[in-house]
Amino acid sequence: MTNAEKKKVIIVGAGDGGIILSHRIKKDFDVTLIDKSTMHYFQPWQLHIAFSGAKEKKIEKRKLIPRGAKFINKEVKKVDLANRKVVLDGEELSYDYLVVDTGSRGDYSKIPGHQELFNEFGDFHSNTEAAERLWSKVKSFSGGDAVIGISYPTYKCPPSPDEAAFLFEEYINKHKLKQKTKIMFITPFPRAYPAEQMNEIVEQTMKERNIEIFTFFDVESIDTKNRIINSIEGDKLHYDFAAIVPPHRGAGIVEGFSDDDGFVKTDKFKLNIGDYDDAYCMGDATNIPTSKSAVTAHLESKVIRDRLLGIDSRFNGRTHCPFEFGYRKATFVIGSYDDPVVKLKPSTFMYLMKMGMKYMAWQVIRNQMEWFLEPYFKMTDPKKLSKKNK
Ligand SMILES: Cc1cc2nc3c(=O)[nH]c(=O)nc-3n(C[C@H](O)[C@H](O)[C@H](O)COP(=O)(O)OP(=O)(O)OC[C@H]3O[C@@H](n4cnc5c(N)ncnc54)[C@H](O)[C@@H]3O)c2cc1C
Image (cartoon, rainbow, N blue to C red; front, side):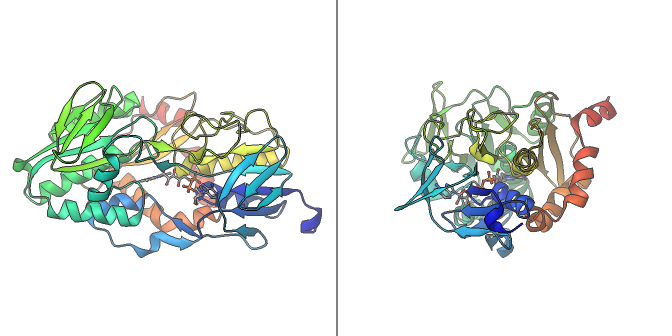
């Protein structure tokens, strides 16, 4: 079949999800990817830059567009599902099928003072430069009050704030600053980690490492002059060092189907936008109740490929998030819509698996690792794991 005979798929956002989907469907469809950026970032590595000074240039690459697909380097202003139109600056494109993969980003304007905090400290959640800024603060920290955590319930990579607290503790312990430091972990959730089973391990570990947990802490404002973080609930925490994950937003470009935070109203099983059967959403951009993670986008891309090919696949909400505990130990947060997260004790083996992901990331998004990942995801199915765990 020539490209002219194939159905036209437009993928808005060439992130982890959009790229892997384009590689999966390139033979069967005429694919156009649109992204405002030409670069792709391996976001998990920001944690290691920020808390262990990792110097890894390979986390940035030009977008890995499949041969035969078109790439348009522009910002999409609006998606009009009723008229099947994608609106760019001064141009409109039509499609047979649309997939939105515009990700999520930190919104530093939502909490007064957050932008100033970000300007001074950087963070581990936005880009390489901000992670390097945070690393310079970690390196120059000589003891005092350290506040690490989440400001708002919507953010990507659920384990990352807890991982940040563990990596920071490991650093100050190794640099003999533990006696001079109070580490405080803040979260708007009722637990240090939202999923109860995993939280049992997380809270126990935080207790052992003297990390104080402040639950139901919704950040209201940050007073950067007096170095105070205020919560809606009335708590005030002083900081000398702070690394706070910002509230996250979606792109807000899908007309009539964006929620208040700009996320796309998506069917949690079929991944259609609203009841449009020619429009899908995936990855961080959706409002579905599962982790915002690259693994989620990866698994959703299989469902969307199938559905584009007329196969009635459904997404089961599967999560598989690596979770680092410091001291070369890690676990994975594995669950689904129907299966609660499995309580998996951190181990060095799982740490090595997490670190290995960096080396496979580019092959994964080019759809070259399915020979390994397909059996791996089956082997680690939450139902199977929880039976083994009993
Ligand atoms: C510190 C940290 C650690 C993490 N660790 C892990 C981990 O261990 N495992 C894991 O699975 N996930 C992890 N994640 C999460 C993971 O990186 C994201 O969930 C994943 O990248 C989301 O992929 P996506 O395709 O949805 O969006 P993205 O990869 O963010 O891509 C979105 C794309 O859309 C483009 N875009 C946005 N708006 C527009 C527009 N209007 N017009 C054109 N283009 C647009 C952007 O330029 C971008 O290229 C981590 C994230 C962080 C920050």
